[in-house]
Length: 174
Image (cartoon, rainbow, N blue to C red; front, side, top):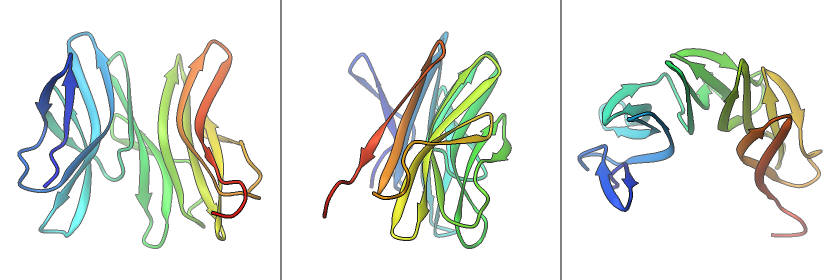
C-alpha cells in the first residue's frame, strides 16, 4: 500500500499507517502548523476519501483535495466534487464548498492560491476529447487555452498583480 507522507529537512513524516492506499498532493506551513491535502482509500465505501491533515491529524473533506492554502485561521482546499455524473471543480474555505464549474462536463481544480481576499484556482475542464486549461479568480473563469489542444493547468502562484500558471498542452499527435 501507499502511505501519505511529507518530508521535513529530509526526514519522513507518515500521515497514514499503510492499512489503505493514501496519497498526499499539496502542503502548506503556517508557523509551526503543517497542513497536507490528499486522499485515503476507504474499503467500506470502495472509494477515496478526500481529507487534509493538520499536524498529522486527519480532517475529512466532502470531496477532492488536490491543493491546500492557509491564510490566518482559514483553510482553503481545491479539488473535485462529483454531482453523480461528472466532476465539478470546487474549492472549500473552512469546509464550505464553492463550485467553480457548472457541472455539465468534468472539471478539475488542481491548485489554489489566496492573496488578500482574492481566491485563485487553477484547473481544467473537458470538452469532448480535449481539455481547456484555465484559472478562476473569485469564481470568474479565465481560459488559458481555446480547446484546440488538450491542455491542463496544474499549479498557480500570484505575485503582486502577476498570475503564474503552469501545466501542459499537447501539440500534434500523441
